[in-house]
Amino acid sequence: MSKLPTIPYKLYEEHGRERSACMDLSDRLRILSKSTISFLIKNHTEAVDKNLPEMHKLFALLQNKLKRYPYLYANPAIGIGFEEYVEAVLLYNYIKNKPLPTATSLKVTPDTYLGGLSDLTGELVRLAHQNEKQVKAIHDYVAGIYNLTIPLSITRNSATRTKLETIGHNLKKIESIIYDLKLRDKI
Image (tube, rainbow, N blue to C red; front, side, top):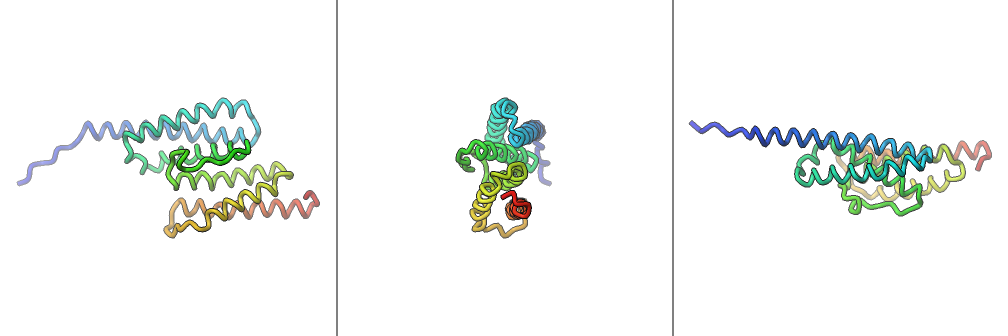
């Protein structure tokens, strides 16, 4: 008869602790990023300036933990914080009229980057609702993002595919805003 396997109790407990710690960091990053996005849309500069350093700090902490435990990248709950962070950073750069950082410069996976980019287009719809003067420029920007994502070959049903389809839906929403403004002779 074979010898019974050795159960790695300590390793299992360590894995559980680190998974919980990463999920907690990701949730804190998600909440802080979401509030930063809201402050950006509402033009609350002081709150944004306060949140950004803390966001970057949480992001760096989470990435450092994941360097030691890379298998935790597969945990979807951890990826949510990264995606919200990417969305907040992209929106900040858009509003400040700075070039958008790349997935490589942010050190995130392509799926995380595309998810954040897709969510950015939703925030741009919110901006278009608020600012009639910028609606055409926002439309052109979202159309540019849409055109950049068309060649991506994502044939499987996945969260990334759904996110990319959202970009097209957001483009149509902005087109509806433009149509409404034209009907009311606002543009």
